[in-house]
Every structure is written in C-alpha cells, then in structure tokens.
Image 1 (tube, each protein chain N blue to C red):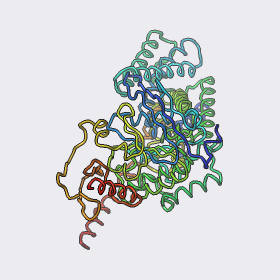
Image 2 (cartoon, one colour):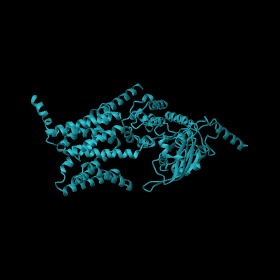
Image 3 (cartoon, helix red, strand yellow):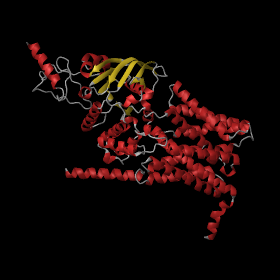
Image 4 (cartoon, rainbow over the protein chains, first blue to last red):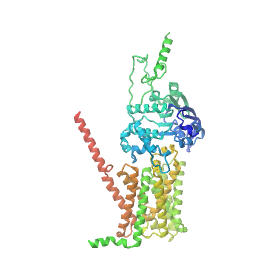
Length: 309
Length: 295
C-alpha cells in the first residue's frame, strides 16, 4: 500500500465519500460530501465563508474525526498517507507567525522532518532537496532571511517550497493568491501546472471565483455539502454559483455589451481586489486569454454559426 | 580594594550559599531553555496559570510527606485538564477560563496551608527559599533539570516545529498530541523546580523573560535557545549571589535582574531593539523623501 503512494507512473487518487463533520459544540460543518479526484489535476475548492472549505481541508489532513463517511488517499486511510509524506499543506499567510525566529532555509527544511531520523539532523539528501525546492520557487538567494523580512509573494513561495521539499503528492493550498502580486500569482500557477504534470493532486481552497477558471481543471463547489463537482466549465455555471453563494455575489449585467463575438471586441472590467468571473452571452465562461483554450473557442464559434444557420 | 574583594567573596565561604548559587543557576538554565518554546508558543499565561495551580499540590504533598514535585505535578495536570475541559464545553474565551481555574487552585492551596499551620511554610511556597533547600528537594530539582535538558536536547526540532506550525507537524505525521503533552509536562516540572528558587508568584518570570529577551536578540531558533538559557542561568546566578547582601530575597533579586536585562535588550538590541527599529523607520522615511526629490 505504502509504496504505491510514490508510484510516479500512476496518478494519486483522493476519494471523499459521504463525509459528515460535526464539531464538539454541535456545529454541523459538513454532511454527505462526496467527490473524487485522480492526479494529475488542479482542483479549485470554492464556496462562501463558513461553507466547510477548511473543515474539508482538515479532514484531508486527518485533523478532524468525521462523524460520517470517510476520506481515502490511494485507497488507504489518511493517517497512512500522512506517515508516507503524501499530504503537504500550504497555510494561509494569516496563520503563520512571521516573527518566529526561523530563516527561509529552516522553514523549507521542516518539510523534511517527517523523513528524518529521531534527532532530525539534516543529511545531504535533505539539504539537496531543500536547495532544489528553493531554486524552483526562486528563493535560493533569500535562504538566510528571517521569514518576516520577505515580501508577500515571497512569503507564499516559502511554504510552497516546503511542500516541494516534503515531496507531497496531495498538495493542499489555502487561499494561495490573497495578498500576492500578479507576477507571483502567475509563477505559482506555472509551478502548480508542473506538479500536475508529475501526477500530483493539487487542491486549492479559494473564494476568489475569477481565478478558478483560469488555472483549475476541476472544481468542487461547496456549501455545507458538495453542490457540484467536475470539470470547471461544467461546474461554474450561473445556476450552480447562485446555489452555492446565494445572495453573497454581486451581479453586473452588461446588456447589449460589446462582447458579442469572440474576436475583435473586448470589454475591460476593473476590480479593486479579486478577479471577476465573467460569463458570455449564452452563459459560458469567459477566459482572460485563449492560450490553450483554442479548441474551446473554435467549438463555440462553430455552434454560433450553426445557430445562425 | 582588598576589603571590597574580601566582602564580595564572603557568600562563597558558606556551604549553603554555594549550594544555592549552583542550584539557582541550574534552574535558571533549564527555565531559560524552556522559555524559548513557551514564549513562541504563546504559552506565557499558561505558565503563570500552572505556577499558581501547583500550589495546592505542593501544600498537600508537604502535608502527606510526599515529594513536593509529585503533588505539584498532580495538581498542575488537573488544572490543565480542567482548563481544556471548560474551554471545549463552554463558549468562554481562553483567558477567562485560565483566570478562573488558576485562581481557584491557588485559593485552594492557600486554604490548605492556612488550615494546617506548621505542615508547610506559606512563605516558602509563595516566595521560595533556595537558601534552605533540603537535600530531597535538591535531588528533585537535579532530576527534573537533567530530564528536561535531555528531552529538549533530543527533540527540540520537533518541539520547535510544533510551536511554529502545529498543522505542518501533523501533516508530516509527527505525533502532535504527544509533543503537546511533552511540552506541558516539561513546563509543569520546571515550574516545580523553579518554585524552590523564586516561589510560585515569580515562577512565570523565569519561564518568560529570558525567552522574550532572546527573541529580541536573534533571528534563529537554535541561537535563541542558547541565549535564553545563558540569560536565565546568568541572572539566576548573579541574582542569588546578590541576594546574600539583601538578606535573602532571592526570588526578588533574580527576577529584578532579569527585568533589568530585558529592559536593556528591549532598548538596545541591535536589530529588534526599540532604538534600532526607530532608526530604521527614520532611515526608511528619509530614503522615501530622497526618492521623491529624484522624481
């Protein structure tokens, strides 16, 4: 069982079935939540505040005991997966004590503790893994900095590097793009795509709707239970999102807007914080750029012309 | 000059004084080591609560002729358990829960002491009395110190990760519950040891001040542990020595000295001291102006 966790030729498999979680104070955070993912994939976990995103994360890390249902990783219990260093977690920036006296190097080395000996003394292999991870997120030059002395984007990348050094195959990211500049966001997305190619499952918890279609292959829509799951384009419909978010979302309709065909015309939308989610005239998702999505757009164009006929 | 030297060496002529100096230094080093974890984990208040909660245990142990450490440990664990239970089962905040539990235990301790005059000396428990430490207590202190140093020496990296990011420790498959327990047990044990030196009221200073000062002095955890241990041991040694000249207020001397050291560090620490931060802030706003001029 344990060996199959690191079988790079096969994708990892995460299965959540009938998961229910009730906290000690009686609060029911999740009930009957089911979905499954097979690596490599990037999956967005989307829902309003209090929808159970962090509870679902905690269940995948074995922090909460389900009152119903089960989470399995490659068919085995979460506990075994943790022991085999399969699960890596990238925390939200707010959860970290940035004044803690540790350097960037120290933090990334912590990712290796699970596979070190009793005294946690770093061996050559550990140091090499840390160096490679730091170089991959372009933080090698900053390895001796105390973590509080980094910029917002660098801070995020330290913990991503820690997940890389750990060698996790199920990587959980909590709100990775809050307080991060656009360049860092793109760098992170490129890295996540590389991990996907190597068969990892990357689960990204976010309330930033607009970014999900840009980089997530799949999405799980959550509100106390799984409302929808599958390929992003089929999950992200106006109907599903309204069901998940209720009245929380603001809607802006551009009646007779300039976006009526896919080439030539464009509309610019400015927002102070998050990337907006844009739907086309017939309810399909609009993407920021077409790269990699040419077939999708061809498909739409074909349908349009058919409809005109 | 000769006379001054002679006066300063007087304490070392007494066996009880030399013993008190060595024991104080040992307690100071152990508490200092542990204070690095306590301050970073945010357990300073818990340390205060524990140091009060052990009082009824010490009183009972004195009454029953048990080793003081055993009694202290028992009520320390009881109090921690009570706090955890009330916190989970009520909507109250942690500080309120702590306030209630530790004062309750402390009050119970005072009550036991006052109801059984002569069994235990109230002043010894509350203010400590390192100068009159009995052989049996001395042995306890040494055992506690050695065990604590060995455990910290072997598992400090795990405990550091637990303090820094318990969630990560858990995803790495580390036994977080055990680590939590180990840190609590070490804390209770050192509280008992420090009780002898400075008394219940001032124990928390031994568990917080060295770590806090060390945190302002360094950006690496390993170094912080050593600095905290050194500060704790040094202050305890010098404080106990000075107390000879102040007629026995050992706890007061040690903790006052710690506070003085902390004050100096707070002001003049090279990077994180108040003055350094202010200098940096001024330089930053200065360069901001320069840029504006360039634009």
